[in-house]
Length: 162
Image (cartoon, rainbow, N blue to C red; front, side, top):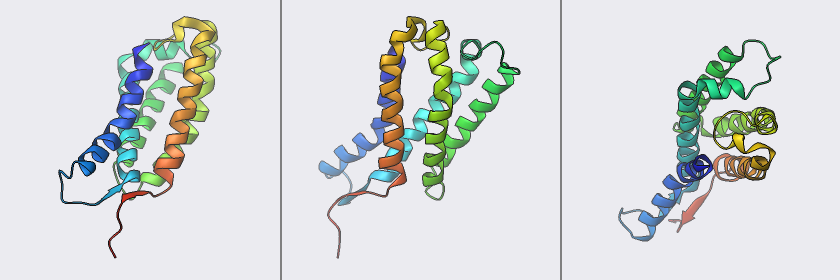
């Protein structure tokens, strides 16, 4: 059950750290790019997801219905997709596109989470059964909202120089 908390920690750490450093005036800046640090957090989160696809491969294969062909290659390919998204989220040129793709991935992958929870298979809390969806569904909404509001829309915190 630790995984949802790890995801939230990875997601908010860069933005929260940058905000604290801004307020403490550690650096000689008076503006904070919310988009930049929010994308970095989402990038760290997607990198965490990528690692899971190669470390917990069997658990992730079990999260897919048995009638689905090529389950192992699907896990590896989706892991590589998550790595590509993670890398793109660290590049200002690709951040907005990567964040939009992240939203698509969150929506597309959610049925696997529903299946895993109903079947009580996989890792990360799915063994709890359908009750886990009470945690997973709001987490998905948080991730989608973060991607849209903080990564797809440019935001600045602080004073604007004239």
